[in-house]
Length: 251
Length: 345
Image (cartoon, rainbow over all chains, first blue to last red):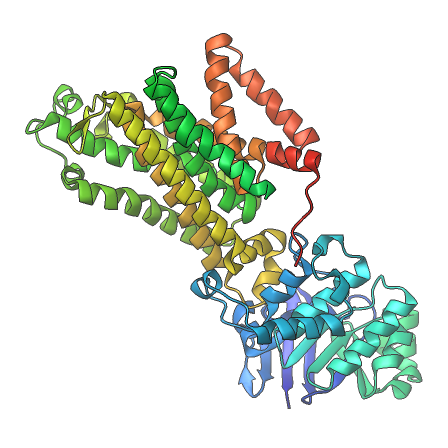
């Protein structure tokens, strides 16, 4: 197992944001997590990448406990995070955005005397090709379109060479065509990385969910299964169609 | 090519024209000395540009670091001038023996080292505390301002043993050379110019290295930098110390050229003014920091002799129109006017 989570719980000011009894991910698996607003999806990713500290519970990444570690050490272990709002470096060129992300020594002295190797340049161009940004490598990242920024951020995460990619709503704000491309990109990436994707767009989920889909609802695991199982599951339909909470509790 | 013209122009005016003008008797030694002091400010401004323009951390205590350098070298010069006896202000204050912290400043070597180590250590410790608690933005500005105020109050006191309100003055020699001699003044001017150039090229190298790009990345999106596995705090701390060092170097050259250093140089207003030079010149561009420091101070000298009371209005007006109409400063304005393209890869 690349990732296994047991009895994870976190609450913000008394509200249980997440209480997940069990979750696991194989190596090179692409898992989609869906769920209505406030289901705890982003919170879950926040815990995995060290942004939020869990109250209780265990997170094992490659059999190593990582809960409570800092963002930097978790990133070093090989977990990369793409945020919902594209988070790139708008003042730098696309090339520099990718260069900074690439896996290498990241202390001050190495940065001061850094010289890019041919291998690294080739790798950056390879990733740029993959995310379709070869033509804009020398433009300022702030000038990119929303969709391109999303791809750039995926590129940044991929260049860190993580074993696990955490991707939060990659298709948000994208056109249909861009969404489709993003899906293909994620499928291609899943040949080499474990990936967790959060998404709302069902068409997009259908495109990328080749294996299991996890449904979260109010911080708890509702159901896990293939896309078709999920689509026909009455509980999932109910929670998405927004039956009120008493009805859900009676289910 | 275009870039080289600016460099050549700068060197031609300040390294050749001004000194040659002085030797021919056209430019007074006071003018030379004045520009020498502007260069000191420009060195400090480079540091401010690194920390504020590139990294996005608004530090409002750079004048304090500047003065730490100034006071150090002034202490040394004062001790040398006084010789075997105590500096005059100590006699007036009825201090009977040299305070312990003055003793190391009797040696020039130790003085130079301390002038660099004290500000950087000070910056390291305050920076460590501030960045560790993840203080940023306006809180950083407020806390550093409070720090500047606290240190100013400390230096104002006679009991601190640094001359109180009057500061340190009346030093006459440096490495045995009389400071009043025009040649020594010219020499100090040239050293300041040289160090400004060295500082500029060092900063330029730094900002173009990956280190500089990480700094800009911190300014743009700090959390993304952490998630890309850089220790943001290390980088912030490093740039804070570098900025403090640059300010201290500027300060060390400033004191012998001015002949006086008082706590007035290190109050909150002084730090705010330093930040304004960079804002007016164009932050995020090293040339902007230098242009801002030189031009604003030059303007200050002109305005205070022509219309003595209106300087603050002029500065305020300049600041407002800069913020409103050309937020990239003078250099940004020139760039937009000449429409230079960004370098391509």
